[in-house]
Length: 217
Image (cartoon, rainbow, N blue to C red; front, side, top):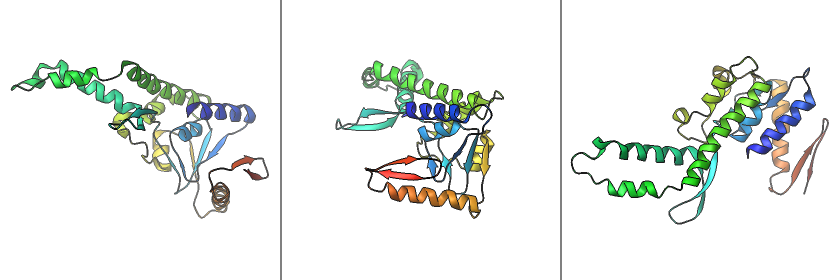
């Protein structure tokens, strides 16, 4: 999900050039990869209906009935680390508690899967830093902001957590807040709604130019 966001951000950045300003308009929500794409801009245009989300890498795993499910990579790593820390602490089993079951549970964690999750978490932060560095935060604050957006302790692996325009500004992102009743925002919102209606069947694709939006099946 990140590769397309990274590629689109790079293409847009080259198109705009060093002298131009790249704006990303968020009419509704931009989560995870959408947030990453927004980070590649110079300015994020937002209003009352707009929201970003934490950068929370997801990975396909299996549930108890062996069905594929999409879960945050953080949850797998955090569960392993918490269990490993408990087993390594002798005080956890005072009073006759049985450690064998939990030790066996620790062995059930897939090392390859665990390593992949750790790599995804690191990669997501590096990509956020790179996009911010080449865009809106060339002043050197990109490391802190990327850390905030990928901080699992802050977001608790809540993929749908809301970061509104005020939160984004407080975090250090360059946001252009628009009044929802302004003519410019109303034009953005109308275009967004018409695009959503054009793609309602989930089959069509939308091709954009500087003067028209064309849906194709």
